[in-house]
Image 1 (cartoon, helix red, strand yellow):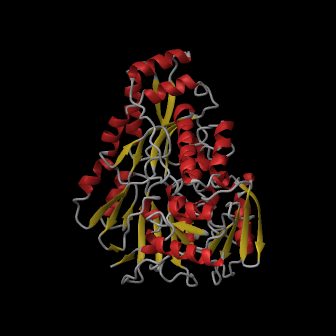
Image 2 (cartoon, one colour):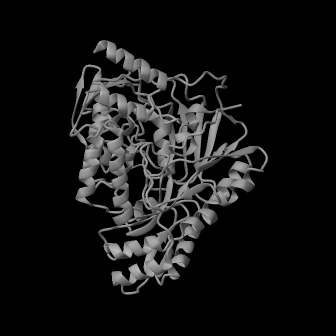
Image 3 (cartoon, helix red, strand yellow):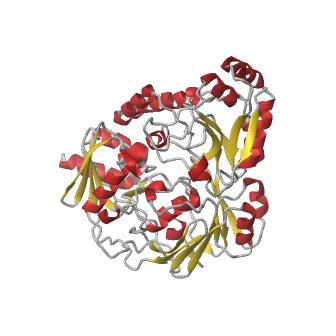
Length: 522
């Protein structure tokens, strides 16, 4: 067994643990050990303050990683925190707070060896007990954590020396990837009662926290990884207005601006002193219906609305080529275990027939949008209104303010615009947003057969069988869910020429939130 394991580890190191390879090896052997391979050394310049102008921040934002629901809180998590593991730009798994991972042969029991010498921003040493307390908090439904859906599959957890052992209700070869969720930043055990205290173990510690306005950070002197965190500090200015954000990057007030509107990306790329960076991935711009709330509890009405949206037109006019057509499922070809479904087309006649069958009374159907929902969301709502009108479906567009959208509209109002950054693996995406009990089930899609199949897919270690199961799960959402997914978006950022070390990473925006860690100023 030792010889077999040694050979396995050699294979993993050579392949840098691709997800497909990992699933195969986890199924074949009882234990795996992984270590992230560092990037090739580059000459970097230390120092300076990185200034970021970001949309997606609100006055209601919290420093609690579990509550991060939009772009700025996502970046706060990444700047201040560290997860057990991370997902690299090429989809491989990188060790962070965990320095090795072992699995039982059936992928039910997982052992995370915790790195020594890591300190929190309050000066305390990170211990396995802190890791356990963090994971237990996100497993508690009362925490309202965005990671609760993926933590539900855990039966029990315990500390065993320098190891945190996780026992699942059923085997799951994807568990290490689930631990890369950005909500799962390791915090001190003392932070369980005060998770918004801003104490992490990342490269930068919080100095100023003015939600919806600005956040500033200084380099944490005791940060454990000297290959990251090249700046003396980071400043985030919340600039939700897209025009003001682009003016800030063009004038040199900020070094990085997120959420570049696709309609101006090509024009902006010709501006002096900056580069437009774009990368495709799993992110998608959507309209979401609550399946348990009238009139969207009517399957025929949901079907009518899905048939009444012109996806191709939306990609052309809203994304200007910086994306691709969606198909009312959160999964696209960026996922390794992907199976294409028959593409749903814009069909006004079929939409009109489904609308008539629904028996809807003809009153306006209110769709809530905000420019902060996703770039071009207001215009996308107008296009949807026009295409639905051709089918006799009365959409009324209600524009909401950006501030408070993610706390007062998303996941509360029954029909609204939204976006998802995607997740590294299907199980994480489905568990976060479509499992019946998930806090972030923003379509209220609660189907026992879906839940059962998702759990079976987790336990299935044969990639071919698992692929079939994921195809069926996608079909369930496509056919019966409350998701209208017209397009998968590129992540588009404007980056000043002084920023060096940029890499393409389609997991999330701004290099999966690692721009402050991996870039430097020339």
